[in-house]
Length: 448
Image (cartoon, rainbow, N blue to C red):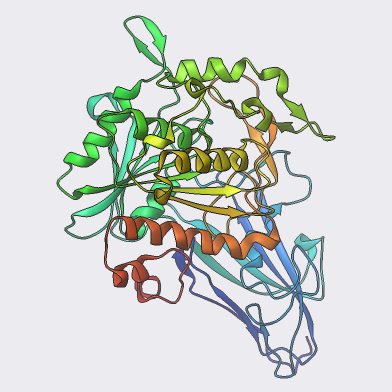
């Protein structure tokens, strides 16, 4: 920049917001037709660095607006207002198999937005930084309460929204990787739900023997929500991802205690021994371990472990007995779980049983297994180590490709709409709490 030219002004609005809220990145005071690079950088909790960048040219007024102007290259191209987040990748030279996932929801995801002179694709450490802005992305909104619970032998975390309640609630079941994953429940509570994130994959020592939890464990969790003074007992949903979705389906059909108002299953399959324990399910899956495939880069493809869809009714959950609405969210390119085939079979089973009016299927092309909150970085594959596997391998987990990003935005909006609609909350509340709607007053004021 010449000595006569004013310093460029980089702004991001808002600089502190929930992770599912969009932001506006703008550069002013540039010469017209000036080439710049916008870059986002995150230093993760795992001590890895993630980056995304776009190449821009200022307009006739000397401005660059990421929400309106096209990126001419970089980690994304075209008009992509949130490309600086969803296109993030580990910086060159990083460890393989990485995935950006927030572990401690009590702290923000800190993002640096940087402006460089010229169009850069590498050598950022030596580049000329013209301006920078620090941005905080939160899963936990102000006032949300995080409560660790060990009641009745449970291992979970309960998140409660601010306010007196009672709140609609969600029992949140993550997948087969195990551990206590809190960020989805934290985000749900930030949008008005009481949400219990439940760890259930770790074996317990019971009577001197190692055992997986049974239905009584999940029933205790459901009852804990139901009996909580800040929860509306008649408005509890169960939400599961991957293996957690399979557990959710089985519980809702077979348990006399777990009777949710609605059921949301992401990347689900209903295949597994009817009324079988977790141990029975793992044993059944392991019988087909020879169906595991590997691609040319030795990445694991697991979807064939449950295929073909069995005709034997004892081998799959009888969804024809469902009495509550079911929302299936399907990635049509899921390489981990046969979600598309399972959704079609579930539809046929419910049509035959006469309860297909309870079923809603949201199916997205070019979308994989791990469907994450909006603007999360696309992770085509990552290292996966379950509680049953001593050694990690690289699995196809990618959440979605670029062309399905906007479909995913509709996806999460639909999740919120269906949950509230099924729980008979007023439409005005639905609109105020819907995910991804950065124009609502809730989003604008939540961190003010």
